[in-house]
Length: 197
Length: 142
Image (cartoon, each protein chain N blue to C red):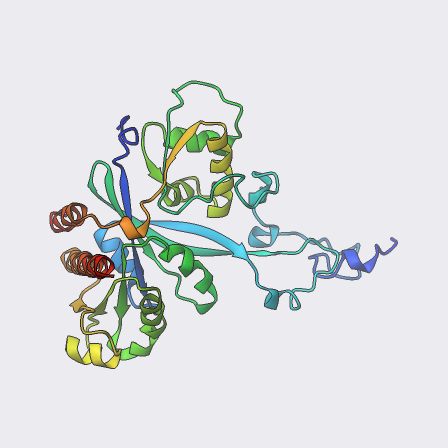
């Protein structure tokens, strides 16, 4: 382990897990890796200032946000980190940092509340971050085909839609494999486009 | 009991005006953490040098048993990163401190050259085909 950084071969990749509240983000991160809670904090926005009038008293200017992350060690010197994105809208500011340098993202969807994942789909589309939509199969729900979900979300044809059970390790692995393959294709296509320019 | 100027009071758990006979106690969350997180950073909210990415890997070469002029939290960070590359996110989770605080503490350690940090590969260069293949095979083998 001593040589971990000296040869410069240590590499960490970042994958985000996004989706609406209660859709199974934590479950997915947990089923494929070890989960750990991460605390971060940010400056409160100006909107909060008028409300918390503590004139003269030291102002509370930060708020704490908790999120989950996990690690999968591929081999010594190569790890994949999974970050569950905070679900609430007011923590959007964290997404930008999380998304920076990300290999790709998994957008978890629940077909009973498909609209919940719209913001995540928008976010990754706008930033050109490769993503797959994973439909988390909840018991007692009617099964929708991937094509139906893809159409409902108005996805690019290339964006994979997979059905999964976030509780199952094998299923979670398959989602990640799909994502990494997709990210590879997206990058290859971009490189090709660049060389042709 | 003279009333202190009002501007010192609104929002305080003591209420206003103060009631000398009613003792006010702070419990649990109301009392806040035992040490305000940014007291550990002497009030600094940004690291002095670079910003640390969540997945930047940190390793410390400081041999065991060497006493360094660092705070207890920084000593813990050095301990867990000794010869063992950990991401900034893992360090924050392990020492149970907010990311912002950990980043400031890491900035000090880097400045003092007690740690080395490997920055993540820029996304444009990221997925070397072999690496992605390795990741895919690694995930399948889980």
